[in-house]
Image 1: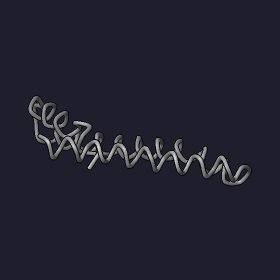
Image 2: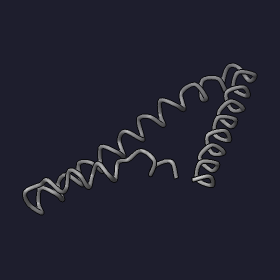
Image 3: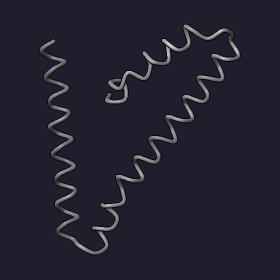
Image 4: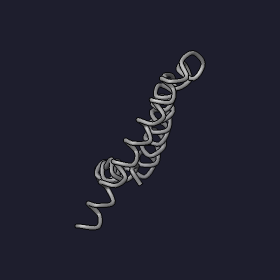
Length: 87
């Protein structure tokens, strides 16, 4: 659900409307898709480092990180749901 909030589909459509040929459009979609995948992999890897390091060495810090991540997820999800219901 959050992936759609970034506006990447709108950006993709805007750029595709300006390309000169079908081949260029397909190439753009491929490069855009590969870049998106690599970006998500790198971000997920970077976000997992504190969790991995804290689990091995500091159990309390690990629990605090997990609780904080859960709380942020619940708050963000609740906010999105509230905005969707109100709008």
